[in-house]
Length: 349
Picture (cartoon, rainbow, N blue to C red):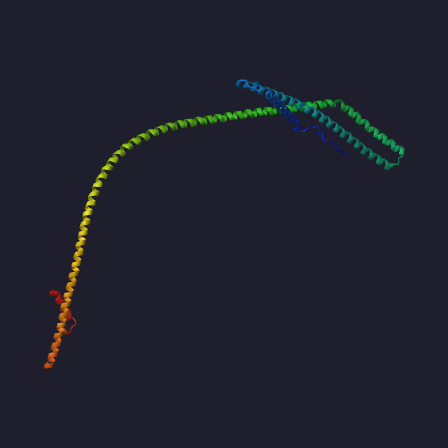
């Protein structure tokens, strides 16, 4: 049967625990520095007022001493961490070896007991045994396996510590090799990054040089364009002056023409008003003349009409008395008689 065994590396500490003494050491150094600064502040002010240059030198010395102390503390921390790591590895390997051997012994015992139980079961089936024989068989079976593992353990103990030391050394060397490889890889990465950065810097320098050349060319072109613009401005200014003079002359001519036209328009307007007044007077005269002619014609026609009627009545009255028939002209009974009379009147007048 398998037995419960603790883990081999239960003795090892967590990585976070290894870094705790560094923090304590940092705190100790900071506390020391704070204590020093407080002690310095408690001194009189006369001693704290040297020249500025001396103060700067003292500060630089203090920083250098602090850096040296910090490096020493780091080295001590690394040494202590490595020693504790080696000790913990040694203990873990020992415990793992012991646990492994205990497991082997327990497994061997269990196998032998199982075989003996099988054999004893078979023998009991074949023939019955007494209590003394059974006890003697149990003692003999228990004594035999105890001697063999002891001999094996003695044989193993001769090389056990040497193997442990070798394994610890191998693991330590492996850890150092890993650290060296990491450092080399970091250096290689740094070298690669430096090379890449140099290549990028060279490319950027080339781009900058090209851009500078382009800027120089553009500046030259800009100066040329400015000179051309100046010349064009001068030419246009001369042309504008000439154009302005010609325009002013034309404006003067147009103003004269405008004045003449305004005077002509004023005279024509006066003439038009005179003609309007004449037409008004003539129209009034025509109207009055037409009215007078019409009234005259009406009066004449009216008198003639009345005279004709009187004449007809006279004839009818007197001839009927004498017994004579009245003969009227045919035109008298027509409708156009009075119209013809009016036409005659118009023609006469």
